Amino acid sequence: MDLGSKKPDESLKREDFIQNLSYDSVIFGFNGTQLKILILEYHNTGLYALPGGFIRKSESLDYAVKRGVKERTGLDHIYLEQFHTFGSLKRSDSNAMKRILEASDYDLKTHNWMLERFLSVAYYALINYDEVAPEPDALSDSINWYSINELPPLMMDHTEIVEKALQVLRDNLEKKLVGMNLLPSKFTMKQLQKVYEAILGEELRRTTFQRRILAMDILTRHEKLYQGKAHKAPYLYSFKSNGANKSQKQKTITQN
Image (tube, rainbow, N blue to C red; front, side, top):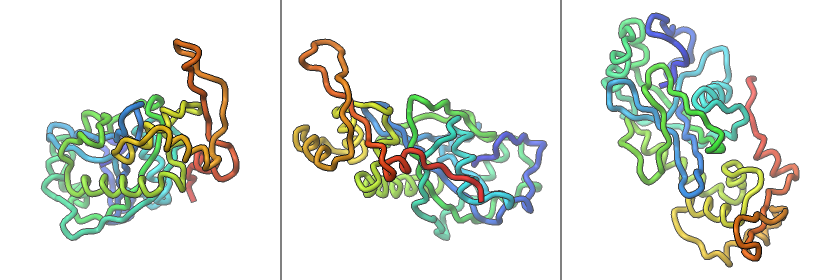
C-alpha cells in the first residue's frame, strides 16, 4: 500500500483521504521474451502485493494512480487504463494490513482507518521495461519484476486483479495497439510477435502473424537491422504516428 515517502512518525490523517476507496495498479513490462509485472514485498511480513494506494481529497482518482505509478517506476509518460472495480465483501484483510503497519512501526491507533474495508479501483499500466528504475514504497523492502506465469502468492484479491488485467489486455491487444507501449520506438517484426505471444500465452505462426499485421496498415517500415549476416538482416518497424496511434503512445493523465 503506497504511503509515498511518509515515515512512521508522520501520520496519515484519515480526513485527508477519500474514505474506504483505494487503487491497485498492474504495471506491465516486456523484457524481450516475457510479460512481467511489478510486485511489492512488504517489510518483514513475507506478504506480496500489487502497488497501490489511497486517493487524497485534493486530487482526482486518475491523478493519484499516475502519481503512484510514477513513484514506483520513475517514469512520467505512462499509458494507464482503468479496467475494473473490486468490492467483494471478503476482499479486505485487516489482519494482513495490521501486520504490515506493525512491521514498519506505524501506530495502529493513529492509522486504524487503514484496517477497514476498502473498495479498489484497478488500473493497468504499460511501460518500457528497460526504462524503469523500480522504487519500493514506505512499507516495502523491495519491488521487483515477476513473470506473469511465476508470480509469488499475492495478498487479498490481488491474484484476481492480475487475472482480470491480463484478460482486458488480451481483449485490447489489437484494437488499442497495446504493443506499442511495451516496445522501443523501432522494433523488428519478431519482437512484435514476441509481445503478442507473451500476452496471449501461445505461439503464433510467423508467416500468418506477419501477413495479418501488415494487412492492418499500422506499421511503417524502416532500414534493416544488421547484426551478422547481411542477407538475414530483418527490417525495423515503427507504429504509424497518426492521431489514433499517437494518442495511445502519449496518453498521460492530468489532475482535474
